[in-house]
Amino acid sequence: MTDVQSGRDRLEETMVIAGSGRGERVLAQLASLSPDIDLEDGLYALISTFAEADEDVCIGVCVPQVEGRQLIVRHAPRPSLPRATDAARLFPELDHEAIFPLAFEREATVHVALWQGTEPLPANDLDSLVLAVGALVRRSRFVASLRRDAGEVNSLRDKAVQSDKLAGLGRMAASIVHELNNPLTSIVAYADLLRKRWDVGAIDSVDRDRLARISEAATRVLNFTRELVAYSRPSTADPTLLSLHDVIERAVQFCDHVLESSKVRLELVFGDLPPIRGLHGPLTQVFVNLLTNACQAMECGGVLRVSTSEDAPEGMVEVAVSDEGHGISEEHLEQLFEAYFTTRGEGGGNGLGLNIVRTIVHAHGGSVCARNRSPIGSIFIVRLPIPARS
Image: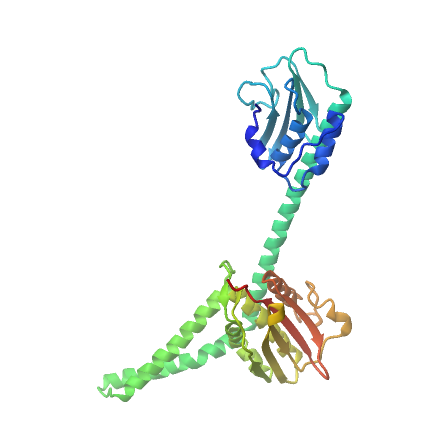
């Protein structure tokens, strides 16, 4: 019985390699381990392979600073004292214990103890064991650092998405004021009129219609501000089934003033689409960015067309955003979605908008591409998967 018997249940993917010597077996076992195997499981696989079927050999490994703790793995085939927690002696029940430090690993050690009368182990085999354990520990630390780096990259990407969203809200400030101004004007005017009529006792049935208009205008403001707040927040919800047309119309609402000030005429050509699975906020950001870019490309106005269709054989829905602007230089087409790449010159943009569009679309399992139209303009095509029907 071993002190790490429970570890066997976690090692279904490891295999014990037969060979002519302990050293060959342990190195072969190292080569067979998955690169992302848990360090404790991997150490157990190595030392149990080294001491396979030999009840006179006790092997242990001590590795400090693994996820904030000291990791100790022991293989002691004979019944022994309770598991040791002192790195100085992993096998205090035995008289002699050899300790081998790992190269490049400060304070990490391999411990070997033999029951009395057992033949000493060959030095070459011990060297192979120490080499294999050291390689596994270094590999494990490297994989852990890659995971941390990947987590930091994802965190920075999420912050960039949120930053771009807030920057977009800044650009839409005029549109927001314009959207709120009309219903607020109606609310103030009708409320003031009704107050004056109340003061003179002149309220009549016509005023009921005025109250309805106040309620309608206030509801419009409330709905718009709720959508604006929801859009500005970081997305933490789980994907749900949604209408892509609702998402596009919401983006159009946010870009209303941009469209008006650019003298752009918008055409929406909606096909018959099934629901898709996604997040309202990020997908709205995709089309806000594409619509805003298209308006900026049409300095002299023109027609901005958004069309949707279903590619049933491919299991995708497709949204095409086409403009009548100056088009895209062929040399820039391949770089268009790279971070910080922009063709607008100094002060014209941070070069993150289209990169974030691609990031969000890819996160939804889709794709986005751009090409020039003939004779003028460009077209951006967003493809998103249709969820499997259960």
